[in-house]
Image (cartoon, rainbow, N blue to C red):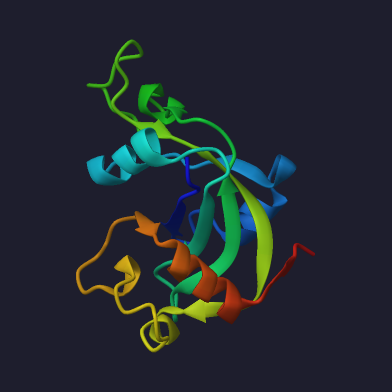
Length: 160
């Protein structure tokens, strides 16, 4: 099965690239997704080893700040069952969970962030989901070619 690539958006004041890099094993579960299409990407399409563009939203400017990978198979998001969690879903049942997640691991810093305004100007990224007007999904597919272009522009380096 071919490796897939994804862009995963987060607001840095909620969970940042720095938070992922300092998590135990540089790995964290991608919890709290409450959009069915994004959930379906995680549950049905993401596989261990898939590449992730880690994207900071709601900052000026928003953009891609690091490279991560999916580390395991999807599993039920435990926050849906926790009444004290802001992601609690009383309609979700342990025997039939509504919400799923994957764990991701920080792999490489970028030499510099690749901002949304810059993404819009880079040849070959014209069809990238994140630059499409009205595209608000927190998880989006990325093509292998888009992944290569971002790596070339962002110049990944070891996490330091």
